[in-house]
Length: 194
Length: 77
Image (cartoon, rainbow over all chains, first blue to last red; front, side):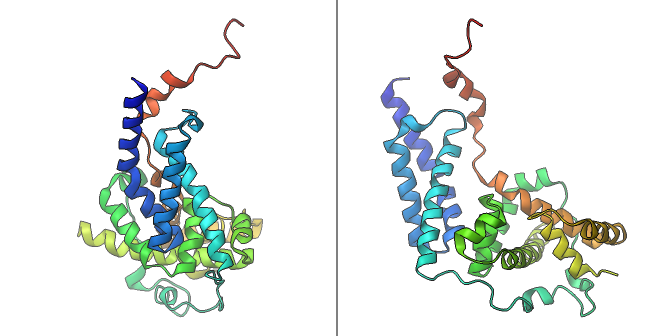
């Protein structure tokens, strides 16, 4: 491959992966313009420093790695602007209370069912549509903490530092995010197969 | 006796920090008796794995070795 056609190939692959990068950034930043900016910066970095790609991972994965740093930078800026609130009231969440009876058992209508084999679920395009929609439906602070933990893979200790909340608060938020997500996904997921 | 709601708290927590012995024991007891919570536990696990599948799993993982394995350190030993 000549250098030029290698460049063309990379540009083509960047264009192809761009929508997923934007969706990923949006989940963390919850702001379309900031998500676009973070992706733009990541793409520029990838194009300007192609020699930094060591070939140890796939090219797209490498670009994703760059994007993660850009997202973290943007999140720090959001924090400075005061866009991050910890949970104020740790005891009350209606969306979650609806899943349980007063005595702490599942509501009949909310009892978790089986989603089948994880691998098959992940390969199903429809699952990702439901997942993305449910992420968008989460309250901002829960979505941010969930994406830092489960999409970015940060520890709750690191998240506390990153966003300036107490670790205990972080665990409460993750519990809520997971319960809301599971209920939302289950609704969308089972509707499709019904 | 721990109820489902508290059980989900431990199911969530165990993905973020190691549970204490007491917590592990009460969660295990609850899961042994409650099918809905076992499903919930699997759903949390799936959500826990979502990140690994969210990144583009590049189809070119196989071809990367062709370009990258010119490590100067080892040949000849």
